[in-house]
Length: 404
Ligand code: ARG
Image: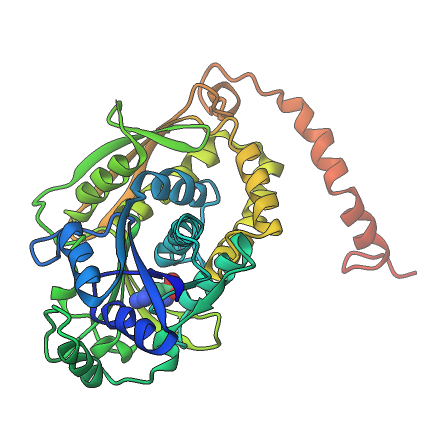
């Protein structure tokens, strides 16, 4: 028997995938559920319940890995350093979790002598790309199996399959949305949302329900581009993202309603909630305005979209991404300081102040009041030379030329 490590979520598809791999690939299945901070609300299962379900579905072993801290500090905070927003908008919520999950799948594959890893993605999305390319990068010798791309079951048939094999799963007759979640946010697709004109129903939102009656303020502290504190209290990465997300989300801040280009050539309508992520990205970019030297900042803003694209496209573990990370990290040496954010219901968030011990903002240079140290006389010669080429062009070739 060959061993397969399956990325297991506890849902219908990955549960029947366990049985499918046994029946169709003659495999021993090791189910690995990775906790990347999926919200544990009243309706969701405990990790132990998820583990037990994998075993009930036929897995020989089921493992739960707590990857919240590395997800926050290695993956989400790298995205903060890169001000990462795919196509200028999407903070890479799902894209960031796949390389973390793959790291643990590969580790489990090694520990258990597996020959392949498997995932529950269909053929239309980005997540299959991320799972497979990341697996190839970390373990080129492992096979990848994608049961849901092969079996061609409708949802109804999947439910029947689960019933036939007595896999204990509670499913509603119709699954309305496809939801993917981690501590960085939530991606919501399908159902009525497939009409890009349709207004998303209010009840899909869980992280951005408005409970605050008045504006809230918070100060985020950064050290070398890494978020380290909220209102001067030092917090571990995961706790900081979650706490900031709760605060910002309580005012309705953090929703995105957009259309994006998937790697596989499909445009899709997406709803995201990412209050903590969007708040941190906003604060971080603002602190860079205060602390980054101009040329460094301008060059960095040219590289940021590339970083986001690579991560979106499944290239987390790739030489270009690694090299860009080195640049991003080096650029953050002096991105240290505090940013004051204000969130006002319904859904408004803004930076209202920033300060840094290494700010490049110099009041004595910027001021129009007394205490000015700027040499005004230097400006005259500077501006004349700055415009010299233009003056020459205008006289010889431009509108101002003297025809004679
Ligand atoms: N379009 C987003 C992305 O590619 C969200 C994907 C959500 N994944 C899911 N399995 N529902 O990152």
